Length: 305
Image 1 (cartoon, rainbow, N blue to C red):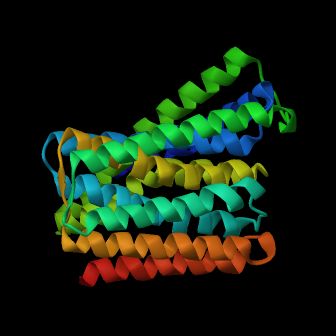
Image 2 (cartoon, rainbow, N blue to C red):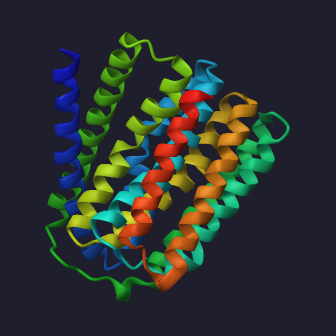
C-alpha cells in the first residue's frame, strides 16, 4: 500500500505543479510583472510550504535537528538538483535581476547563517533578525514588481478567478502530494533499516523540495526559465529567512557540528551556482549535470558520515 500511495503522491505533484505554473504565469501576465517576480515570491513561498510545515512543527515539538537539517538539506537540493536538472533539460539564460540581486543575496544570507551557527545555537534574537530580513526582502520585491509592471510579458492569460483557482488547487495538490511522498518514503526507508538522521537529511529534505523540483521542471519545459530559477532561489531565501527565523523565535535551536559543516557546504554550492550562472550568462547542460553529480557525491558523504 505504501508503494501505491507513493505513486499517487508523485502524480499529485506532477499534475498539481502543471496547474500551479500555468496559473502563476497567467497571474504574472494579468499583473503585468515579469514572471521571475512571481517565481521569487508567490511560487517560491508556495512550494516552500512543506519545508515550513516540517521545520516549524519540529521546532514546536523540540526536534531541533529536523528543523535545521530539513532547511539546509532542502536548500542544497534546490541549488544543485532543482537548478541542475532544469539546466540539463534545457540550458537557459538567467534573468539579469536574479544574477545581480537574488543570487548574491542568497550567498550573503547563507554566509550570515554560517556565522550564526558558529556558537552552536540559533537564538530567538537571531531568528528575529532573519524574519526582519524576510520582511525587508518582500518589501523590496513588491517595490520591484510595481516598478517593472511595464516589463511584464503576458503569454497565455487566463481569467483572474481561473488563475487563482489554478494556483490554489495546484498548490494544494503539490503540498498534499509532497506530504504523501515524504510519509511513505520514510516508512519504506525505515523498513529497510535506514537511520533517522540519514532520513532527515535526505528523504525528508528531498521530499519537501519535490514541489520546487517538479514546479521548476514544468516551468522550464514550458519555456519559463525565469520562473524556474526564481522559484529555486526564492525558496532558498524563504527557507532561511522565514522558516529558520520563525523556528528559532518559537524555540531557540541547538546546532550540531554536522549542521555547521552542511551549512558551509550549502554556502559552497550557492557560490558555485552563481559562478556557473555568470559564465557566459548561461546555465549550460554540462553545468547542470555537474550540479547533480555533486549532489550525488554529497549524498554519498552523508551515507558514510
